Amino acid sequence: MRCIVTKCDKIIDNEFFEKIAEQYSVKVRDEIRNFLTLNSGGYPIKDVILVDGEEYEVRVFLSLNTNNSSYSIEKPLQYFMEKTENKIIPIGIDSGDNYYCVNNEDGKVYYWSSEQDNYYCIADSLQTFILMFI
Image (cartoon, rainbow, N blue to C red; front, side, top):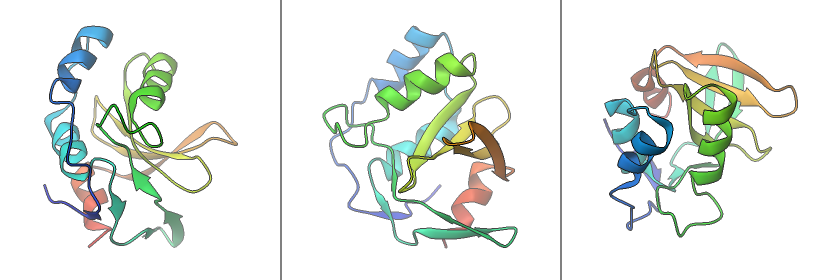
């Protein structure tokens, strides 16, 4: 796993994932935990990725810093966990308030369109998603 951002949050709630496990009765996949810890609240070095000829802009990755109200993972996490029966973990957002999410069961990465309320698979794994930024 590698850091693909600038201006990462340095203060991270180290008990965050334990709180998620307790609140939602789900263990967050290790690769999601590692990704969010390394890239918490960071701005991607490369903010546009290409997926099947389509451009996707990534504004920022969500922050594990519970004091970072602008891009904190807390509210979007609650929304997606309730909406998807604890399956979808948001990891980032674009400039149009659409989210990048990971399916906690199979590890696939999705782009969620807020306007259409629809998920589009953009990577078969978080590692494949990360490689799009390199």
